[in-house]
Structures are given as C-alpha cells and as structure tokens.
Length: 540
Image (cartoon, rainbow, N blue to C red):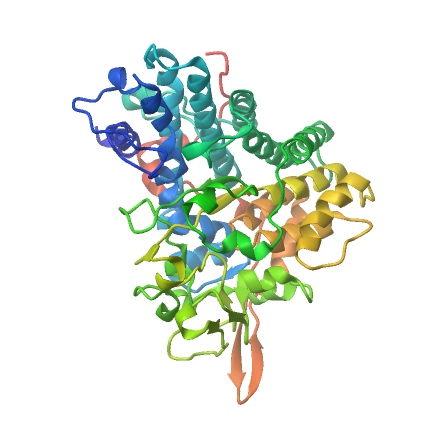
C-alpha cells in the first residue's frame, strides 16, 4: 500500500467530498444524508448540480495559497522574494523537495480526480428525475476543470500522466508520463466537448459557473500556447487560426464587456458582485471567514503589514514587486496604482476609518524591508471594516482570476499577428486597444509581438500568468525568452546616505529552467515518472 499512498491521498478525499463538503454557500446547499454512496448521491437535480460546486474552490486551494503566485510571478521576475523555498523559484533553482512543487502537483491532480468522478459517474448513476441537459452541463463543467488543470500541468512539467479513471490508479499507481503532444490533444478534446455542453449564461445561484464562452476562451489560450510547441522561430499557423476563431467568437458573440475601470476588478463588493462580473470567464471562488480551504489567503501574504488587514496577518513587507516590473510601466498607466504601491500612493478604499491609506516607501521601517521600495496592492482589499466584515485572519472572499475577457482580447490580437513582425489589422487593434485605453494609455495604430507581450505582463501582473507567457515564448523562440529573463533586473534598492542605490542582481536562465522537476515524493514512489513519456492511447 505504501507505493499507492500519494495518489490515494488525493483520490480518497475526493470521494469523501461527495458526502458533504461545501465550497460555496449557493452552489452547494443540500440537507445531510446518511450512508451516501456514488450509487445514490446523484439521484436528484439538486445533487447533480452540487457535484461540480467544489471544483470552483477547494481542490484549487493548495495551488492558490502560495504555489500559484510564486510560480507565476516570482519565477517570471515580477515578484521579488528572498524566502528560502520561494527564492528557489525567483532564482530559477527549484529542487525536487520544494514544498511549493508538492502543493501545485497535488492540487492539480486533486482537481482532475474530482472531475473524473463527475465525468465517469453522472451519465450512468444520475437518477431518472435528472434532466439530460443538466447531466450534460455538469460533465461539461468537469471537463473544463480537468482541461484547465492539465493545461497548468503540461506547461509546468511538460509530459505528465493522463488519468481518466480514478479506480485504475487505486489498483496500479505506477503509471507513465504521456507526451506533451498527447496532453495538449487531451486538453483540446475536453474543452471542445465542454464548449458544446455548457450554456451561454446562468441565472440565480448558478451565476459564476463556467460557460460556453469560458470554454472557448480557454481553448483559444490553449491553441495559442500549442502553436509554438515543437516549432523553431515561428508558430503553427493552423493553431493560430483556431485561437483567432475561438477568441473572436467570444468577443463578437458573447455580449460580454470589459469592466470600465481596471480598479474595479480588484475591489471586493460581495459574493453577488463577484458572480456578476462579466469580465471573469473563470475564477477560483472563495468564501471568507469559513473553514480552511474555502478562502483566499493572498492578502495575508501580500499586504505590507497588519495595519492594512486588521486581523493579525499581513506579511508582505519583506516581499514585493521587482524593480524590473516597476520599470515596465509606462507613465500614466492606471494599472500600476492598482497592482503595486509606490511611494506616496493613496488608497481611499483601505483603512477607511482612518481616512484611507498612503504608502510610504522606506528601506526598513521596522515593519518590513521594502527591498524594492514598493508593495503589492492587487488582491489586498483591507480590513473587516473596509469590507462589511468579510475579512478574517488569512481569509478574504475576493475571487482569483484564471481567465479574464481582457486575456481573450489579447489572445485574439496575438493570433492575428501570428508570425508577422507587426499588424495593423483593424479587428486586432480594436481588441488590443480596448485593454490598453482602459488603462489610460493612447491607442496604437500598429502592434508587434513585443507590444502584446508588454501589455500582457502589465495587465496580468500578480495574476500568476506571466511565467506561462514566458514558457510558450520559449516553445518557439527559446533564445529570445532566455535573453529576456537574463536581462531582467532582479536586484534591490538600498540607501547610501540620502541617495537610493541599486544592488543589481541578474540570473542565468537555460532551457532547463522552463521545466519544473517532478516532486521527489512522487518519483520515489513511481519511478515511471522518470522514464521517457509515451503517447496516450485515445482509443482505449
């Protein structure tokens, strides 16, 4: 049994989850039942509807808690840290025993295990009173979640095992990795099916679930990433065309709009406002002040000090945005103020009872180092008094964006650009400039890859996305991606008298930097994870 322990530790809690875990106050609200089994759990429409509710929160929690942003923003050079485990990512020297690896790996396979449970059981075990369209819809939701988990896995680790049947793993936990090509095809198959099963919109308590547009938007992102895999100097045109088609359909047919103000994306206005956010195509959804694993913990780690949170957490004084990220902002970009705090920035929505909060950058003010003379603002929402009591220790209710409509706009622009050096295509410019002008910047009349790359870095800074942009760039232009990282300023500031001085620090990236090591706890118990990957048998 020892060799099976790691995988069983992921799968068994998923089974137990069906007997009563609640991830959302609205999604999952049913009376307790005794002797609940897979054969009688899915008997009513309410039970079937509840089966996918946890997939919006709890299984993702271990990823979101630290690994998500450490991988996405520290590795990419957006986020500075000298914390031991996290610094390994920042310095591109991650070892197999790093706890963030286990958190990400376990969380993603937990999502897959729960998704498999729904996909494999709803069609055959749902009660006679459950409508066919509801059964199709929840399977579509589960396939979206499974595909999204695999999309993270394939970009971070490359070849990984494709698991469709949880029971098979219980009896044989030594399974091989599958090729990158197989994993991408598996993701595309799942998202394509999800798009055909999911509705265009929801009403009532189901608002906030993934839709047809969520699936098409994520599929566009997958095709854009895959377009560079195995290429050299250019990208696969067929994949670029699919990304353009899918992103274009979301933009032109969904009726969804960007929020007018970037700042509104990151201010918590309550659960209903989170669900009604048109720009959010998929987000991890959190409930504040409930059990551990249901909440967003970002503020606890990112807020500069505990006066900003009012609940005893707020440990962000020793970390913060890199000098390189700070230098990336153009003058007048409104996103800077809403993403990072710099000296003199004022926030009326924080510490309201004191008249707001003004950030003062100091190298060491007795609270935190502020080594980069800046702090993180995004996802920092303030005290309980600032949020109608909906903040507790290490617990807020603001959702974590995974896919925003702004992302789809920029995907469309990049897919149109494709392998060209620049484009003045009217539709591409409309999509690109919709994101850019919202930030208070002038529209462009022609765009390049570097323009889009810059816009993506700034738009999604501290949303754990930039490392994945670097990975897909490395797919088709490795020397350029490596040079970009090696030229980043990852150093800190210090005072020499009254003069601010730069303590420069650069790192050396290589091709190996773009693939994470599989956790040692996994390879120790399944040596097949160290063997060459094999194609997946889609016909079995």
